[in-house]
Image 1: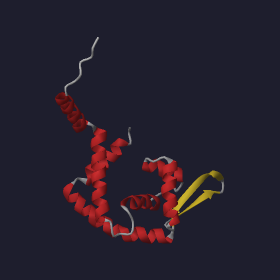
Image 2 (image 1 turned 120 degrees about the horizontal axis):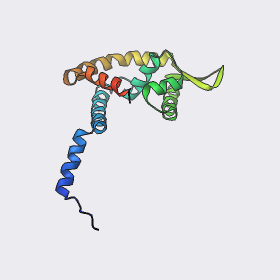
Image 3 (image 1 turned 90 degrees about the horizontal axis):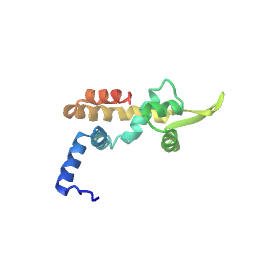
Image 4 (image 1 turned 90 degrees about the vertical axis):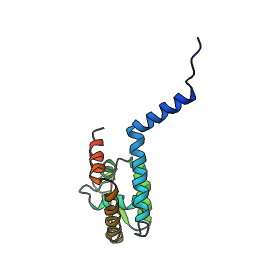
Length: 150
């Protein structure tokens, strides 16, 4: 029994339709474009956009354990730990083992990290105001909140 091979023309159309309808693909595309936009506009701030987001997460945390931070950011702990070690080497964060539970580690901003974040906020505000003219940042926030249900 032979299988009928789909014509390239139909496959191309089916692939295009799948990409246009795919929530995952479109979310990744939007995220890359938004990240590139913000990276370009924050280039002179002293922090990359990724560093800015991570440091802001740390600064705003009520629970400063690495586990809680990883959950909030949707990252696995090993990936987060590698990124945090870079920030620690730059003197922007401190990481310490919790005395009462040697398995837990906490992270917080150093004075240098807090100053860097504060200085970067002005660039972020300008970049975000520009972004808000092109894209509903409320819509992006709703998407992030709705995706927590997954």
